[in-house]
Length: 157
Image (cartoon, one colour):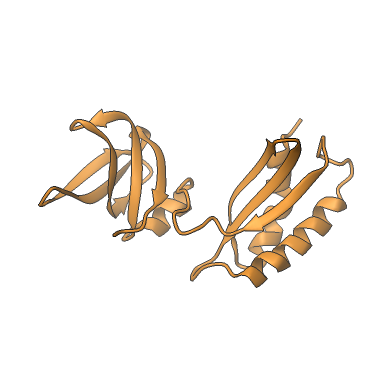
């Protein structure tokens, strides 16, 4: 049996794509006594409140029409932008991130550190190249993609 997230992704993915939006992530989580279905969408140039409202209406209508109902509990639907520091998860995300300032956390230390922030210079399914500052020196380093535990866009200060 498919999970709620898998079902929602299968059902609303094409709907999101029909608006030329990217389906960034889906969460089905319990917080306190309530369940939340969170759908994160984006598009080049950023998603607007109107985009989220339109997508929310269509997603709600689509999910209400499913039979059998895939949701074990009543839930609140939230459709929003993933934010400026959105996670980088898929291969498409990585390719879009080339040339951008990002944050990566590694599973194990490299050169004594597990966290790096810098500009993603190159990406392939096997490796990525990041240019970052180490004190006053600019360093370009290649990482194996399997070393990366978490990645997100970052804001450079």
